[in-house]
Length: 321
Image 1: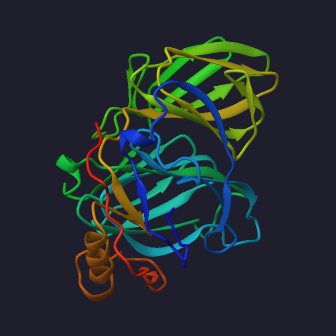
Image 2: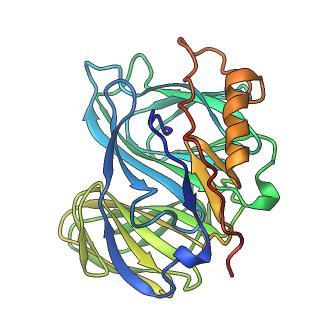
């Protein structure tokens, strides 16, 4: 899943100056974006009021969509740099291909983790024979300076660790939660977890007070620290928390996202994360004119053309401390 917006505008993200250093309850509303074929997503990050949560820089929630008579997700080959993509499904399947030669079908509660490093391209599509419903989330993690040029690679993990409490099952997607660690490679202190709450549950999750957190609602209705959170919305929680109270009267699904605040300001445009406008401009030119991002073999269709990069430089203010 990617940013297919043909009017993509560069934005500054990251930096501790954008982080709430204390616990807050900031409910974020999504922006609805069409994403190829019959898929519409609800975009939570970047948001007008909140750009990142730790190293999490991009969050789309989609479905549940009835695609029985539709092509479903159809995202042509397109480039990425400076980030990891995290594919997470509750229903349906997504076929992933990339320029390293990876080919995998991602199913519910399996981790599809693609590290772009310096450059990669990939496609995502619903298989020709697919399930009736499609429901999931696509997220990006910004890579820190020391690792943003790593060799591109893809990981597919079908068995992930869980943390349990009465009425709660937390599947650890990325990073660590309450001593359970995901097998997915993480390059910054981070956590991503899928929370399944049974109806009538009242519980709490241990948190790291040095992390900032947010909770994305996937299904049902739950109260997060006393705030009702409906599907397709996200509650930003800030830093300084040691636990997170959760309550659900009926079954509900959430995603917990958190991490150490991302110190370095970044420039994010289209499907690239860089450190300057010039770097983004070079990546766009390379996708259009060179073989830097490689070739996705096996996809039936043309690669995605790059949108026009708006004129004028957008420069980070530098490392904030």
